[in-house]
Amino acid sequence: MATDLSEFTIIKEGEAEILMHAKNEVFFNKTQVNNRDLSIAVLRAFISKHKQEHEAKISRRAKSAQKISENNGSEIVMDEASNESATNDEKCNTDCDAHEKLSNECGSPMLPEEQKENVEGKERRDAKPIRVLEALSASGLRALRYAREVEGIGQVVALDNDKASVEACRRNIKFNGSVACAKVESHLTDARVYMLTHPNEFDMVDLDPYGSPSIFLDSAVQSVVDGGMLMCTATDMAVLCGGNGEVCYSKYGSYPLRGKYCHEMALRILLACIESHANRYKRYIVPVLSVQMDFYVRVFVRVYTSASAMKNTPLKLSYVYQCTGCDSFHLQQIGRSVSKNNSVRYLPGFGPSVPQECSDCGKKFNMGGPIWSAPIHDQEWVTSMLADVRSMKDTYPAYDRISAVLTTISEELMDVPLFLSLHNLCATLKCTSPSAVNFRSAVINAGYRISGTHVNPLGLKSDAPMSVIWDIMRCWVKNHPVKAQPEDQPGSIILAKEPVLEANFARAIASLSKAQAKKVARFLPNPERHWGPKLRAGRQITSKHISLLGADAVNGALSHADSEEPNAKRSKVEEDPAPNQ
Image (cartoon, rainbow, N blue to C red):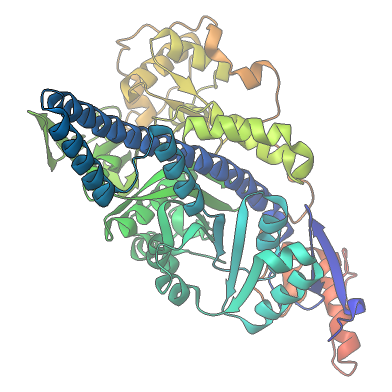
């Protein structure tokens, strides 16, 4: 049955094109182009890494086969040497018997080169193209872009539990031609049931739900092959960032804290939740990239199976103690390990890491977590992806944004969880703020490391303890005095102490990152107005949604509704509505 294109709007992104109806029947958000471009970059890096690992596996097996064949050859030579002392008849009979016995048991002798080629050929036959599962496909745009833009993909399975979405996805698959038809298939099913009935089947599973992914994680970690990739998005940022702590605990098993670092904490809560689900099946995760962008967080992790490696999980999780008076925070590791005589024992972590009252300002602590306190990025992956993105910049519609994010991530301190805000430190002390260069120089001159963070332009990651940070600020206030404050205020209590460290604010060489020194853009503004979340599919667009969608989008939807229901009374929304007379 032919499709009447007059009823649809053609949307092109990358090499894929989709047909979108004027009604809000199927979810589509233009803002997610950043998400899709970054996913394609990670998927390309994963396919390249997968090939390297497969070739390394072939090489190891070939070397093992060669050693076995050499050992067998040396045994045959030793047997022949021992038989030379016998008579000619006995030698002839022995050689014939040995040859016949060897032929019967092992077939004709195989040279090491032939055995190596046989092993490599078998391994190459076993290597299959990458299989991708998009668990919540909606219009199918993401699945179509994977199939059309990424080389090395054999099949993309797109799932959705909404009939209108599956119909739209199948329509878009046909609209994108033979390549899409050959690689992409769409199914109307519950993604959780499908993933549970297809365990260890997909090399990459992509979860991008509207809201929380928590209900899909248990089945997703089972559906990924050993060493496969799981991509996961969470858009319920109000929950993850501490707006509803009890809801976050019920969904993710972790309690959030409302600090400046709340968006990075959201990333680490999501990673800890995925690890918890993976551990139930003797699996564990290795994050390669974790990003907070726009209105969501997105993590890319590899899933491995190992009962022994899984025991290291408590070493990667920590509770967070946040002072209620100042910006001091401390991490309490859940577990520790002790090595003795080539054996490892896993024990509870030492604690508490903080006293009842903050040693800096004397206030109480709030406790949150547990969170993922191990690195959330892989430096090698980030560097490789950044190079690939720059070499293929024309294939990424959101190149400027994703290259800026990857550049900032590549300069982060990978082993430092959470971050400080220089402006918040100054707000606590009621003082003027030093420049970021001066503050970073003081930390570096004190013998510690410091970097920015992709989450917040004003955020600073450092391995310096809070005592050193406050000493630097005390030295700054001595040169830039502040007005007297009540003695019970946290700032007054902090400044009442003499600094142990004499801060040196002289310009340090590494006070600016390479990107900052070259004036590379790292934090870009939104490309257009109303760049953010959109309505859930199926909800009726009304004048209430003008702040979310914009006047043009709302008026267009209302005009379309008026043409279908001429008798209905609907009022268009103007940019500046006239007051009632």
